[in-house]
Image (cartoon, rainbow, N blue to C red; front, side):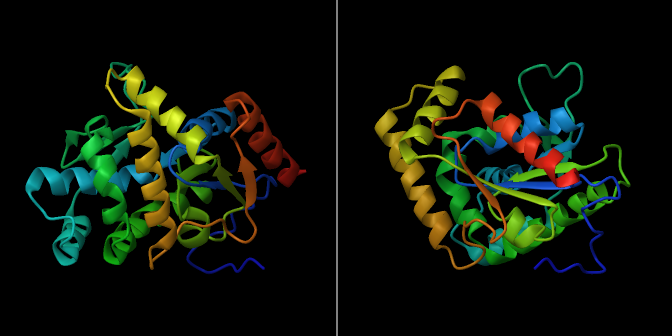
Length: 252
């Protein structure tokens, strides 16, 4: 049973269709690609919440903060200035949004291998998650209530439907085999001109899955009322169509 609170408006708007859509799932399951396309189809805001954890990781590495120092890392997350903005016309480089840390564009640097290797440690820190979840919740609330530039929001992450916005009108859990996800990550990295080894990418994916699912705070898991979609043998267009159809069904 979904519980409504005074803090959040009912995401099932008077128009019927859910105004808050959450897409959770493991690394490289297609969440960002699908979430962005679904947001475009619905004219909703797209928000990949994972960029916040990557931004904190990037800042920690750049500023010499030990990611294993829980208190120092938490203080950084609580005080850091992270902003997310739509791409400007002169930022036609494939980005889905512009990520700013203290006014600096870190959109691509947060995708570096060293960030990949440390972001799960950052994301497992309870105080970091609490600090960033509050910011995510505020954004979701504003767009979900129709009080912003877009009529709704698609939020992508690993605990959006279970922790950040458990009252969302539609929750999707997107999955795929580790091998397929490693293949996708490999192609993505190669497209950016990076020389990588498939077995290492697969090992990183498996290690991250284990860390994300076994952490004590907000472990990776589908919400009880989430729709689970295995994308292993689906094209992106098929997945987008399936999610948009779920939105339309919810509004009918």
